Image (cartoon, rainbow, N blue to C red; front, side, top):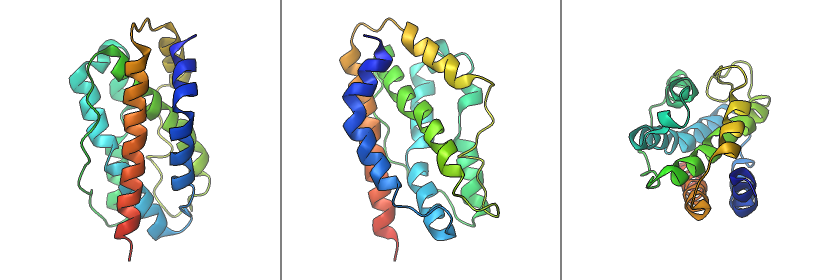
Length: 178
């Protein structure tokens, strides 16, 4: 079984919880969209930095073009807000953990493209519609499928930890809304 299949099967419950929570946001409404972006901003910059520190460039040479933290920061700035406090990213010990976190982040781009359709044209949406390398998701999936990870459980653990952080971030932001 490929690492992608293992990750999909063993994180489906987490993925569903995150989709359910973030699906409650009405992205056509400025304040809810801002809250949605702030929740992501608690995770994305820290996770991307952790991936860089762990050596993600060895696995994905086009990594710099895949980063979205600056797009997220710009969108939040355009909405007149500042970045919230970051949550600590999951520990990335080894290649398997890097693949697990990448699986969640790269997959979130597919979800973001769908969500972007509900964002009003007057709102900034660079984060949800990144213009990365052409065919980037296919390249990622091909590399993930070709990965020869000795410990798929470590990849699953890292992916689940990142999904949990998204849940925590979403809940923190929702609690902060008056």
